Amino acid sequence: MIFTTGGIKGGSGKTTFATNLAIYLSSKGRDVLFVDADDQGSAHAFSIQREATTNGNTGYTAIRQSDKEVRSEVLKLASKFDDIVIDTGGRDTTSQRAALSITDVYLVPFYPRSLDIWTLEKVESLISDMQVANPKLKAFSFINRADSQGGDNRDVAELLKESQIVTYLDTPLVQRKTFANAISYGLGIFEMKPKDKKATDEFTALYEALFSALKIKAY
Ligand SMILES: Nc1ncnc2c1ncn2[C@@H]1O[C@H](COP(=O)(O)OP(=O)(O)OP(=O)(O)O)[C@@H](O)[C@H]1O
Ligand SMILES: [Mg+2]
Image (cartoon, rainbow, N blue to C red; front, top):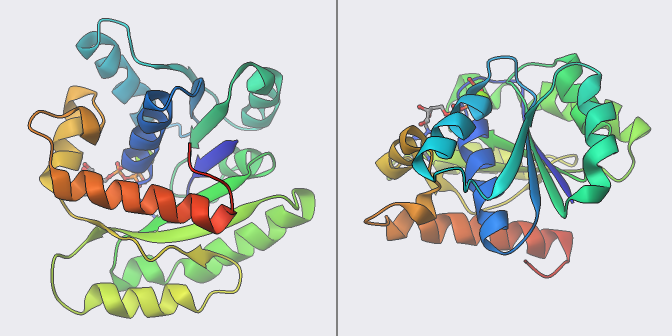
């Protein structure tokens, strides 16, 4: 399956989620291609750090692509892998559109703040455009970096739930230090010692909610 993280906002947690998804899928025995399709190169930098931390046993194959080549290169390699995770930047770019033209599952994290939720309409319009070219494209939103308390999560969840175009997964990832720490070591949150059980439970709940919404058994 081809998963793409994206959206129209910076800093929502696209790369953080993409790295954890690639590592999690690989830990389930899936052969994973991890594509950095953001010119900022954060996923690529993560993979370099991971190479060093794991002595080369990253568990996935990493490549970098941009613009239209995101589509052509991924299509070329697709049959060699069980799953492909593509991390895109937080703008409506040729790279993100190229990724969406071949994606099965589009994952859009939202930081629960007004400036972030105000991008929802643009995200919906991008999805609608891309579904013309790629009718199999399914889009999902979730809250990332959720506050551990307060009403902002609920307010944003209400708005996300209303969308007819992007399905809201009601399994937020709370703002937790382990996500940022894991990234800096080149690790996934499940590989951290000690493991932050709340964070890993939340990630598992999100992963299972996604597969349940897709009506396929989680790997
Ligand atoms: N659930 C979380 N808890 C704590 N920190 C988080 C969480 N998710 C992301 N972060 C932190 O938030 C920052 C932005 O995350 P990340 O780089 O993954 O976002 P992004 O959407 O990929 O950004 P960009 O648009 O620049 O590509 C990083 O410092 C990351 O460590
Ligand atoms: Mg990023």
